Length: 621
Image 1: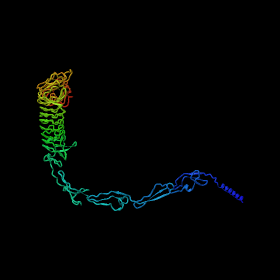
Image 2: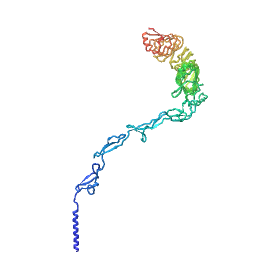
Image 3: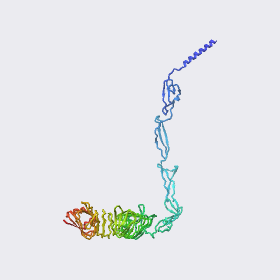
Image 4: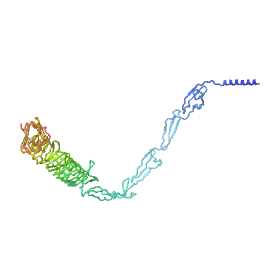
């Protein structure tokens, strides 16, 4: 029994082993790889798998150990079309829909879309109403069918929304009057048309004249100016004067129709008048016979030629704040006296030239005395200079018949023996001299025109220390009949009644005739061996009967014989130049020690204006 059971078990084991051997798969997979790809309307996609065609199985790995289902491996087709551009087949309009079509670039499937009907709307801007014409709000209008719609919610309308015509009143408060500007009572003004009304309903129109309130009275102060508006009191100040801005300063620019005595106001249009402009009264003042003028305290400067040529102007009141007087500001005026305020700092060239002044005092702040300041003020007898003066032009009293110069306390200048001297070491410079002056010792230089115009100087002695004498130093001195040069000098000497400039230490020197004394006799210089030129103004107004120049003379300076009373002048054949207006106001005979041909040739090179038409030319050869 036991043996049978054991045999049965053994047979069963053999049978199981045989069955197991029959079930073992001996197939080798040959799988192809399908890379991952997205499905579309035309093709299936792939998750990225391996497929064995032999056993028709799907795997996720190359070793084919992880089998997957077909649904996991193969992705089914979908509706992912590759659509082309839309093409419109019919256009919509205001009443009909349109249509457009597109097709898939892969499968060719087409799709149709309906285009809704619509208006072609154009924006129309609004028109603001006026006081007399209505306006309208902005709206939209179809350019095809003409239908209109509101701008915001696009509701259909039959016409643009109307904005009614109406005034737009704005209240205006009452404006009180002042002394310079009229006020107005309260009213309403339309912001659109500008019309004025008495009521807010804009039914009662009024004019600006009807609304105007009368001016208040001026309140004039001690300066005759309104303390409220700065308007001048024209019962005191001269009306009609001309004012304007010159270099950003409110200035008197003209006299207008004013004549005679003038008082200038201190303000114009509320702005202080601080200047008298250049040429402000120069022409009109002469034409209108300006006789006197009072300038206000606000004026600080007087421009160039401001009153030039006002010969009738005999009185002028300058303000205490005045700081500068320009060039030729009072040239040719008729005043005999003028008070210059202490505030004055600057004087321009020729500021008082040609005036009728008797005497004058320059204030303490003036540090520079310009050229020709008092030129040809023939009545000017006395001049007082400030101690602070730092520079003085030698022509400041050119042409003046001055008797007295006063200066004290100056470190740079002094007055000695009637001469204004510039201090120096070891010698001094003579700036100007007056009638009766004596040239001090140790003078090294006499400035140009230093004594010009002094009519009562009768004699002068030139110190031996003088080494330089400027042009015209003794011109127009009709009483100067005697002049001598102190012994020991090397630069100057007297010959034939004339002052000769020469360096006597030089053998081949060239000498210049500087001045001819008014001797009433002939000036015979024929014996001078080195005389080469006649200086400017040398014989001006000279009282001589005849002038005999040596053959060595080559040059005659400008104005050399101006107003000369000589009957004739003998000139050598070597003359090369005759200066500008050399014989002005002369009626003399020139005797030329040469031929006519030589004279004609030389005369063509002479300066313009040497006035040969007034002369008689006699050629001696």
